[in-house]
Length: 250
Image 1 (cartoon, one colour):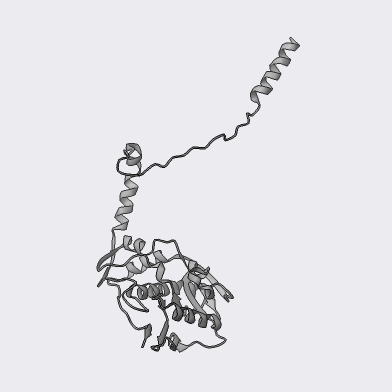
Image 2 (cartoon, helix red, strand yellow):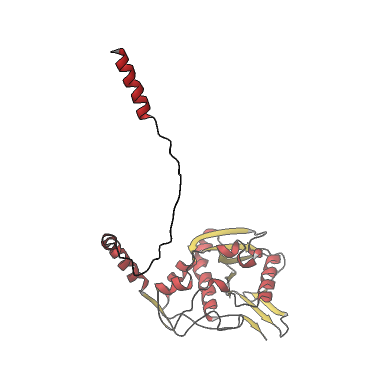
């Protein structure tokens, strides 16, 4: 009887031992996604209400554009760039001031971050996703006067319509700076300036290292640029579309 029990115990030990397994081969193939694939009715029925709700939200009219706006309708500024810089500054101002007690001096975004035009007519939520498909968040960096001068030098050298607000630059015909004003005043040595921008640029995107290096302070607003755009569209009936000479060559 003891022999039988012992044999049974040995059998259990081997039966319960974890079998070691390993990957011996991985295979894959490209599957083309097209209309030729048959939809799974069960999955379609599950996602249908979600899809319809999203489409309804995306098509909801928020505001109105009085004219076509794109990022190449001016030489050193653009209608859509001016609009974006202005609303990022205005939408961020109360959030930043509530947290720090300080105001925002200027806004700087990048020309390449504008991914679509705003056509004349009704503006809906989809418009915001087309213009700003990225998940960029808004940050406020406090810069030294040296970095502010580097910011101006960057814009002058780039000669692109990077969106700015709160900053005006005038060049002569040879691209020399005649005037660079922050809120109507020259940049003052030893003073610091608060610049609202995207987390992408603050991390040195587009070579804007003056937003990254030797920053005096940094405030992350936990507010995406696209959400600021949607909030702004909801707050106005007709959006402004203008070139106002904030960055010009005479």
